[in-house]
Length: 138
Image (cartoon, rainbow, N blue to C red):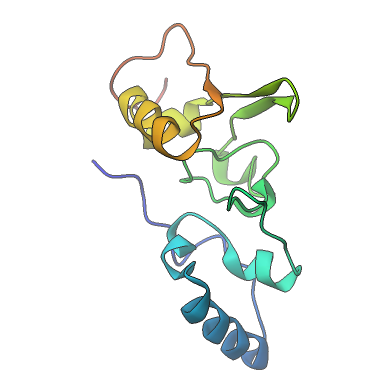
C-alpha cells in the first residue's frame, strides 16, 4: 500500500498571480513531482533556499513525507506527529520516525529511502517497529 498522496492537501494558498508564477517556476525547477509530499508553494512563497545536498527545509514537509518531522508546520495537525532529527552537521544526523511515519512506510521502505536519499544520516527505528505499517490504534 503506497503512502497517501497529499498533492491537494497541506498547501499554502497563493493568489492568482503568485499561483501562475509558482506554476511556471515548478515546471522549470524539477520539483513539480514533490507536490505530493511537500508544500512547495509555502517554500516558494517564503523564498526558501536549497541546501547544497538538494534538500529543502523540513518546515514544509507534509505528513506523508518519509522524513516528516516535528520541525514541519504540519506536525500536530490532523493527528499527524512528525519524527525527530537529532545531531548536527559535524557529528552527523540521526532520524527517529514517529508512529505517523510508520503508518505511511514500512521499516524496510524507510531503510531503502535512507540508503538512497539520506546515506549520511542514521535511521533509528523504535525497538517495537514491525516490518509492516502500523495500523490504527498502534
